[in-house]
Length: 290
Image (cartoon, rainbow, N blue to C red; front, top):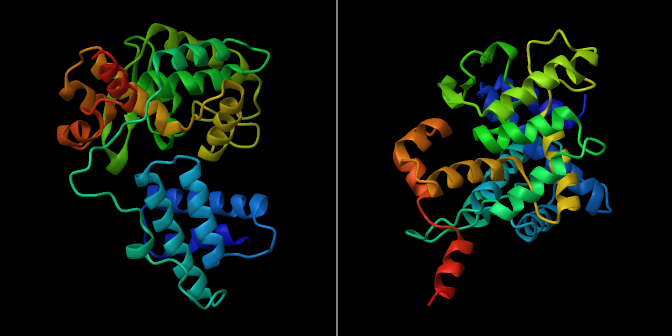
């Protein structure tokens, strides 16, 4: 059993929620991949490796919230390694290592521009490079705003083809309904009746299946988006689509309450905090009008 699996089992025994476990383990696997690719010496966790990884996340322009989440995951992993006697020290100190955001600071939303959305959609049409399943993944992320954890858990029974609605089970078991565009529904039909029928997991209850499992793993989606990013020339990650979904709705005049319900936010205030601010690009364009 590798350490990530042992860590996962330990989290289960500690009584952590399934979504928390998935998040922690995913972050640890991401850190392990970084070590394999970038750090020559063979090490599990050290202060040096952590500091380099944190700088890597900053260089890749991850949001402060995402970086702090990963730091917290690695702190829990550090605790696990100490408990197992694999390491002797605490290399991560939350108060010192978390990225500090000044109180009252404005949250700058990163979203795809209209031009980038057009480029993405054009690229997705090339069936020589993009499978029907992967095209559907991008469409669902872009046009429903689902979280990646919600996306991989969509079941065939969650789709109502009569009303073109998708039932999503979000954080804390909360259920919401999202209306789907006709082109998204058509793409689901094409995938279910086409590529998916050729899979050995075609009897799976989950909509999105992989070659090796009855449902896709979030890391497979992140890896594909990373490859697509290189072709397009701008960075893609699952949550960017969610930001784009909410931002585009607000720019088109959809009221905050409706956007909040579609996004599955706990409160309208949460939606306002993240999306009522204009994007950095919009600010630059506004100043240039002077």
